[in-house]
Image (tube, rainbow over the protein chains, first blue to last red):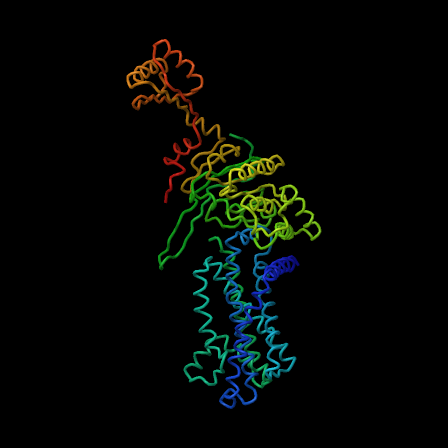
Length: 253
Length: 328
């Protein structure tokens, strides 16, 4: 009960923080929109190649774009935490009886909410571009993106708590996000990839997230892609969140 | 020594060693090397020392932010190793950075802080209004804290630390970076808190602050406490006052020195050109006699000054270096 109350207080605090500068929430939509307008049309003529069935290029591309938004949108939230560390806000919270994990729950839930809003907006924009998706499948895909966002946000917070400076955080996050996104078939399905690249991608948990996301959007749910994707992302999220709490507990060491 | 065993803070052999790995090598830094400390209820206790002496590290351990490497701490009646939750409810801590959320207003900061201590929304709002009144923040409480002056922000920081009316308030360098006026205001505020029964434990590297504000001072250097006492006790422990007498020439100074040593055997003297420096106890009583002595021997003093030992002298005596020296 106390944990829930603490999470609520921290969540509201962080949402208020975001709402003071709502423009940034929408600025981060700029990149996915560019992909939607300037990249997706290229795929139309590729329809019929392996992994890109003709007439379903939009349903292949959009779910990848969603995962990309979840990955990149939440990867840089650590910067915001560094501000709070520097101004002593985190120390102040830690000296109160507030639950340690609530300090981070309040943040990752805010990050997940921002992402949900973005996913819904992009979906609405994509409909005139020919996106057809089963409503229930779409609803089911949302928790997947939420979990990806929490995973990346937790990782970003853990690094922020360890480094406490932007100079170290930025290159670390960049070094991780680019290979992770390239190796997950976000922009083009990995069915196009040579074998060695496919094998490499199997080691990347986010490639399973992309598979699950595509299975839901295309309605091609015969295999276990959805289940596997959810399980893997859930496990990864649990590990990352646990790691971030550990980093918070050791912040002064 | 105070025989009262009901200390609000009591530490025994408190140590903190930071271990870090740099390029695979294990690097150990002993920040606090065995601190024995007792703080009485209701006093203003000053922890005086240069940067890097271990003041903040000790205070962070007391505030539950850092886990001690070894040693015991009893604070507000609880064992630090066993009962952090109770300690957090009963202490307030204001870090050097402050801790206010710059994007939020002072009022919003105070309401959230109260809610983190478990107050319901209505009580938290009333509590915030009371604090704004008490710390005279009415004119700026509705602006974002990022727009505050240094002095205004410090007031908010201390108000945040006092939100739950703790018995003990830990202040890490409460007046560093403040202009003289804001510093004087902060000192008044700290004294007012003491009158209300709050025990204050503050760190400082300002001699003047320790001298004017604190009931007890502990000098810390290199991770250990070197000496402790009231400002007056510490200054008296130095012993001597300094009398500086200027003469027309070296010869007169020399004659005066001889006469002085005949009369006051305990004095220590030094001559630099025409200036005679005398180290002696109870300097204020010596001066009239000294003047008479010079008069009857037709020696003409051109100037005379008396200075009591300062905390700078105390610091120099016990640590072997001045507080202002930058040391690694």
